[in-house]
Length: 420
View 1 (cartoon, rainbow, N blue to C red):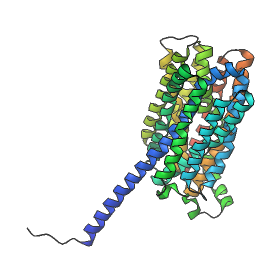
View 2 (view 1 turned 90 degrees about the horizontal axis):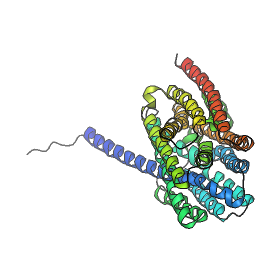
View 3 (view 1 turned 90 degrees about the vertical axis):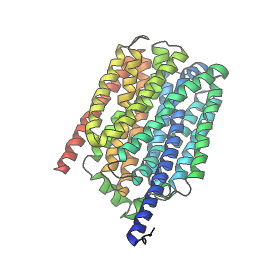
View 4 (view 1 turned 120 degrees about the horizontal axis):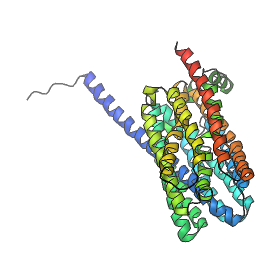
């Protein structure tokens, strides 16, 4: 048998194939660890199922819960631009790891709280920690994949992270019933701490998890800011997020949905946690599904449809007055249609921006969104205290979603003009 000599082209093809395999493996590994980090954050978000216990033991009201949740969102919001830009100068895996460790400390702090001040302060620490998660992770993911694949990967990142919303309520409720709500928070602290250490160890050689590529073609921070804000549709999308933070945002949903089930519909703790987890399951499925097909359907078109349906589904919660056969399907639809909206808008921003613009836009997007969430969380809690019913919250959230939809339509028209 005669062996043909290898040509240079064959060698290059083999080398390219091996390099592609290594790149795919590296990307999958990075996505897995980033998704695990996001999962840990949403395990932490699930602490809201313990708010009913905390209200009773610490003697709090809904306004105080709203203020504390708002402080969390404020700290998280305004620091997201800092973490987004910090990725230009520091390894991004370390920034995310630091955030996870701070969330672990916050969980311990809440568990040790005996009065509002301790609860409030710990919420702020948690907000600082969570600020690193979204802008830095999305920046890493966006650099690794091309624009046609970005929504699929961001959808997976969010969808897998949202699994924490499903597991956390059930796990924390089980621990709280067996050992008390403080023990549940102490156990919760293990997840982000472990994840933070794993990120430091296993992504230390991953070049995309280091400093951002933004500085490679940057003409300076101020030039990057001006360039980013000139992108058609970008400002409208960022403004839409400010309203969506109070309409379909995770902050308000995670804060008030469990309280609605417990104190509005009078479900027991197990019923409330199980029902809430099913709604979160809808969010996981919706985020992954829409993320996979949004590129074909169009990011902004898909976002507008989801926002319109979300506004109606949230408004219809005002018709729910007890546990019935429609409640669980209704909440699953709420989760299915509301959760994908934010990741879809992020995919849009990532797709039509360069790395030096992307960090600016994502930082502003998260900063304004989470910052506005602090205002909405406080106002919603105040409305519930004033009127004594949760319907006032649903009316306000639905209305805010309509405002966001109008801004999404504006962004769509601006992007369409660019395409023409």
